Image (cartoon, rainbow, N blue to C red):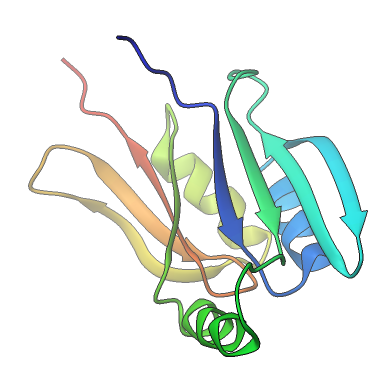
Length: 135
């Protein structure tokens, strides 16, 4: 059996803020934007990976208490967001910093071999961007 990643979901508080961040700050393309009964699903992705989608959504399934608990975790940044790879992590860092992204960690050489940095999206989700080691 061979599996490929198709879609992942990132819970956001404000879909419009999330859209601006992932589209304008990170440069992802918008593939779909669907609203239904107060919830919204915005599908974005890297142009270089047309088969991999990230769905930004304010939809939380469950009881009101469940939704409140998840919203609290998102606001605290306790849930991991997504990780991206770039060819030049320092150049990418300068671009997202200039766009006003909240910086968690500046570019750092990690012991596992990548150079990466971390930022938060407007909902508090951590986004990491790395540059793989060169051979």
